[in-house]
Image (cartoon, rainbow, N blue to C red; front, side, top):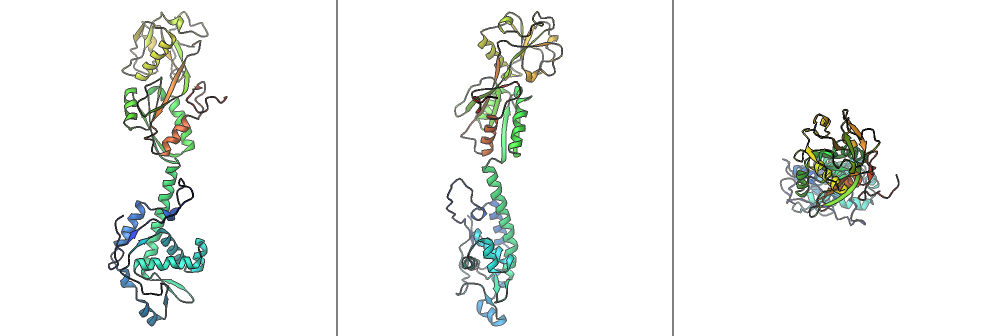
Length: 396
């Protein structure tokens, strides 16, 4: 750490951290054991002020002769060429005495013995090269240097306390940010549910939500441009990336009103194997197109398909395309459909949703906390938990 000069004459002063030897390495020490940029900045201000502490202080002999005051310092004269490190606990001790103007009350406030407190003050005065207190049998007072140091020490300690609290909140995942990338099918229902639940658990964590096409999503995760990715379908798992299929949504079909199966309560994919399917444009919605291909391959059918002219993910106007008999749809996308007939599939077919992240790059606990929330929160109504969900085996 760069040396800090206090006053014009003393040698450079450095700020050092007090070793604390905590019993648990994962517990953040209290403010007396930490430093930070704010702490350093305030000491730079302290060190570069335009007055000389030593000019404001008289030596022990002259002070005693003029005013019969006994300086609270070590028996030997203050060594103005002495410069070591100011510790936070010294500043805390100084502020307590300067505030109480009574060593006994200050020691009690700090839960210290009075001899220990006195030694901390003496050491601070030696390191600063100037007395900070005057003391008689009746009262303790501040020197000019002490009054100046009190104002600055309060600011320093407040900044250190704020920095410590902020670091602790980040370490606990209570603050920070999560960069969440999603493909369009995740946006209507699943993403709002997860973000709302996480906002309850960690209200001070900011979620940066980015809606992305699937190739961009995978690349952004690999390049650490996002922290977490969620998409529909089963996707590749690049090196270093962890994937969990954690929830699934039931798949449905939308039929033309004149279709022969509109009076049925449900339809099977096999029964539609020879009817013309409207296929979503892969260039517009690659994740949804991939999912539909995976569903048809798993069902063992390859129905004739034509590309939908519709450019909306919901495909609400697909029936205007006369050469299409049916399309695949999910409850997330079906809300605005009016001119078609929606039927569930029997046997049931599920659309899986995959969560991916890189644990080696998830440096902030906020990211780990979001992943945990996503893998534990109940999925939307009508959806199901999948093996990647941490409560997959738990009854609803």
